[in-house]
Image (cartoon, rainbow, N blue to C red; front, top):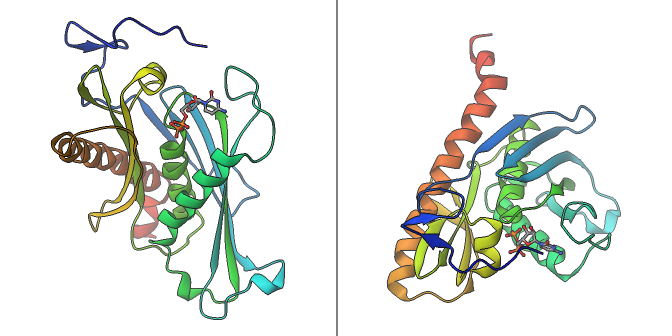
Length: 241
Ligand code: CDP
């Protein structure tokens, strides 16, 4: 367990030296898994996340089929070794909730009506967790969907914002997440400006909320740029073929 620091902001700086509106370093690898239809590996700070997409494919069990559109399934899973105290394997209330809200965010962009009676299955494995895993998972899933060639209105790009020592900060570190006053993960569809996902844990004033949302949207746009660059690095040349 991390020791509770006396302060999370010292001399106008965060404990890891970042500016208030600065993301942790993000690395995106497109298509590392060859048996999935699409995949993505993301390192976001010390988080390590792998996403795999299968489909569109036939739905099993069949009674889940929808005649007008594809169904989308999303499984967020934390590996037992991903956290400091070993996590009991298998789903728990937290992972079921994260899977549900993340699926809803992605369902808002996937053009499901193109694939009636099919399923699009998204699996996200958290290999190492260090705060902000649900947003890193969404970012990876969104790129993996694009890698699988699933038609979408746009990419979903996510990051969190929060309040620590009465100050709004972007992309909470583990200490800030554990000992801060509020944590708000947000996802946007960068090319339409829609908000696809927003949760809040803790308290903010209305004014803080407005400012926090602005900061989060800025952070999501930075993530979008990195997702786009990673996809173009793999697929950009295809335009000329
Ligand atoms: O990861 P995210 O910020 O989306 O979700 P959270 O529920 O706010 O969890 C914050 C962090 O707590 C995670 O990223 C993990 O580092 C840690 N955690 C843990 O150590 N053990 C768990 N069973 C769940 C979370």
